[in-house]
Length: 147
Image (spheres, helix red, strand yellow):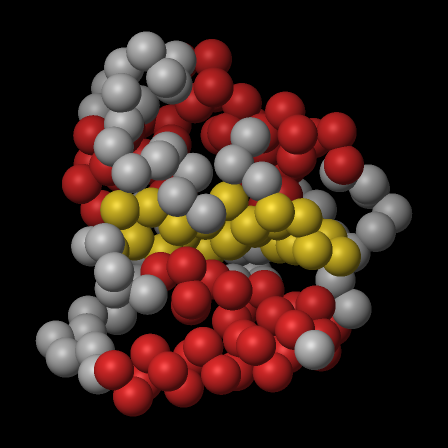
């Protein structure tokens, strides 16, 4: 994550994307001193972006639970690509994004720039069995780090 400055976590609903994203954010806030910014909107993220501060941005379900053509226009996709590049080129910023896999596939249709960005150093962690105990352990880590 620190070399590309961003990570995209994708999967089916209920898999634990948000929990994993929160755990990553908690680590960088608690252990590295990053300022935490939670948003789904690139305009809002740009408003609080501070070049001199270590910041970690969390875009949870950034295209929503189901992408609708009227909710997200080409200009928004361009802004997202520009923001990811800005994060990637910074020395003190990180970005965590989560999305449902089918929403991401739909959103990347006709958007080669974002598809190229998301395919950089792509790694896949496939969980065949994601136990309730593992989910509870992740939640405990998150809540412990928030105190």
